[in-house]
Structures are given as C-alpha cells and as structure tokens.
Length: 536
Image (cartoon, rainbow, N blue to C red; front, top):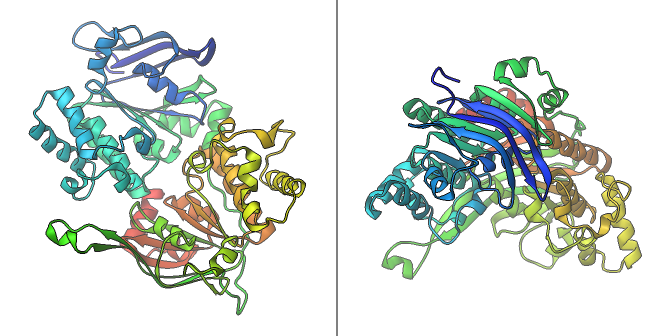
C-alpha cells in the first residue's frame, strides 16, 4: 500500500457455484505500481479469483467486496451495474488470458483484434487505431509487427500469440493488469523480455500488476509480494523475499521445494550401437505465398529446419531447446513422420518418413506425448478407448479381453488404478486433473511398446508439483523399459533434469550440440549463454 491507500482492496471475497464455495473469504490489497503474484496449483482458485474481480465468472455467486480506487469514492467491483463494468474492463483493469489460441478469434487477424480494442476504448478512427495496434505489437517484441498484424492467430507461434494478447491488454494503458500465466507459452529469454516490458510500462504509467502463475522463478524475479492459494483459501502472503526465505505454511514449502530433480540412468553408449533415431542433413520447408502477380504461378519456400544432423542412442534422452519459432517442434513432427523432409532419417537403422509401406511397421516404434493433455485427448472417447486405440492398429488380433488387460496394465504402470478411480476405464478425460490426463497420454503412447517417445513440452502446461511427478514417472519408465526420449522444451531446468544430450536450435539451425554438461555448463554460443542465464 501507499500513503494514499491501495489501488484495489479485496476483503472477504467468496465465489460459489450452485451453493458450493470454491473461494473462501480472500483478503488482499494491491498498491499503485505494485506487482502481486498469486500462486498455487490448478484448482486452487487463483484464476477464479481474478475473473471474479472483473465479474467474468458465469453463474457464480460472489460475496465480499473489491474496492477500486478512482477520482471519487472507491467503487465496489462486485456490486457495480454491468454498464459501469463495461467501462472499467480494458480501460482501467485489463486481463491477459492464459491460452491465447482460444482467447484470440481465429477469424480475424491479430492486428484487427488489437485495433478493435483501441477503437472501442479510445474512440479513435480506423486508421489511427491500426497504427496504434502496430505500435502495441512492436512494444511486445514481435518481429516485423506491421506484417504480423496481418496474420491470423494460427499463423503465429505460441509465443507470438501470447505477445499479441499482451499487446491487446496493454493497448489502453490500464491502471491494473490481471495477467493469468502470461509467460506460459514463452521461452525463457522471451519471458525476461515480457517481464522487462511490463516493468517498463509500470515505471511509465504507474500500472499495477496481479500475476497468476505457477512459475516460482518468475515470482522471484518479478513480484514485490506473493499470495499463496490452496483449495480456495489464501494460506500465506507477504514480501517475496520473506516468503521464499522462510515460508510459514506447509503448502508454500511444498511448492518451493517442487523443482525438477535429475534421476536418470547414465546409459553409456555401447560401442557399435545403432541409433534408434538418426537424421542427416534433414531439411523441412513450407510453401509460402508470394505477393503480387508472381504468386499466381509459383510459391516461395520457408525453411523451418536447415540441415539438421543428430543421433538418439538407445536408453538416452536427447533434449532440443530453443525459443518459439526456432524449428524444434517442426523437427519433432518430422521425427514422427508427420512432415515431409529432405535429407535422411532412420529409425533403428531403417529409412523413415519416405511415405512407403514400411513406415507403418516402424510407426509403432516412435510415439508421442503432446504438450497439452486436454486438447490431445478426445473428449468423446473413454479412457479404455483412448489408451487402447493403438492396439487396434498395431495388434488387431487381440481380443477384447486381452486388449482391456493391456490397457489396465499400462494405466497401472503410469499410476492410475481402479482402486483410485472407480470405473476408470469408462471415464472421460475431463474427469481428471492436468497431471492425470498427461499420465493417460503417456499410457496411450506406451501401450504399443515403442522404442522412442517424442515428448513435446510434456510438462509446460502443468503446475510445479505435478511437473515434478510427471518427470519422475518418465524417468522411472526410461529405466524400466530402456526407452529413448526426444525431448522438446524451452525449459532449461527440465533439460538439466531429463536429458543426456542436448541440441540448441535458433531460426531452424542447430547452434551447438553435446552432452548436457558440455552445452549447459560451458555454453559457447551467445544464444545458449543467454538461455542458461535467463533460466538461472
């Protein structure tokens, strides 16, 4: 708080749905220019708390008060007429939502969407609003903002979409910004850039920020104060340095101690061993339109991966780290045989990805666990159907009983049993938490007994405590089954915990490669040095 009082004073905030209370009497204040971090696991109530302040929670019963200071008497956000709330949203309090792909309209360019906010809130003409939108995009560090403003959301990388959301929220210079996991989709270097941007805007405008996150490193670097939520209760709050140095609540201590732990087999490479996955001079290109008349007759090429050489040896993990747009996910898709490529690629010594009939026999050897377990699991299929689907393709001779037995065994191996979840096989994905859904995704991949698992950001959507559990599961499975992992991530700490070898990618090129110790402890390239420094 400042001498003039808080910008926002929340007292006794409760949120209930159908008579069931999910947020219990929360109290906190935010001073002008202050950075408050609201932390906790999924389901702790932190996002619902932020949404309640803007009255964006449908069918919720709200209690308590949330007084927003202004020129006159403070206004209670929980009791204002909807017409007044329309004036506050975006202009005085803005919000950055967690998932930009669902928050952005897929039918409009990102420039149109940012300009629309400016037109509505600042009463500017279309031309002036468009120019202001490009300035807002440029301020978030999007390269070539005038061109990117013409792009639709699906044409941008995850990090670029998140920056477009930030540009939209900050376009009207709000006094308070509610940021729900604003850096989840960003790489460590880009996280620092966005945090620096928010800090600079605070200095210029006095804007306050309430950041909702499970990234404790971000909290340490960015926030002034931290408030910890568990199961809808605010269990602890105070200055960041005080809470991290001497946490008072057991839950806070558990959060702080939940960091990736290295527990992987040494897996020395045997002399003469055949790589389970190998690429030589691999190149992946996308056709892109050429403006003007020339585009009628031919298309240009965008080279997403340029001349990649790598080997993944049996029982080892090869980590691929780089920022959004570096080509690491494209490399993973090519490794899965889902993208055409030039050059050579082989699985256990056999040519891979040429589109021949031999690919199908090899496909069970290379399986994948995607980043977001909610979107990668069909909401219309039961657990039994999801996990057992691969057996229908690769082992069609199995009877229903045999298939069910295999499904139950795989679920048990990833820590999901009927004893924990009665009726497990007939449940649907939405009935599980994020970490449990990711375990389902791992079981689905493992049921066909693959040699290689491609892990595409397998823990970035998870809380720190759940992330630790999933990484421990993957480490155990690697020891027991001698699995090889191709791990795609922007989290250097996950690479340190999981990988034996690492490649650093930028703009489609492999900048440097070697063992984890060689690359991360003694990085040679300035970009790698920046990645390691940002993650420390």
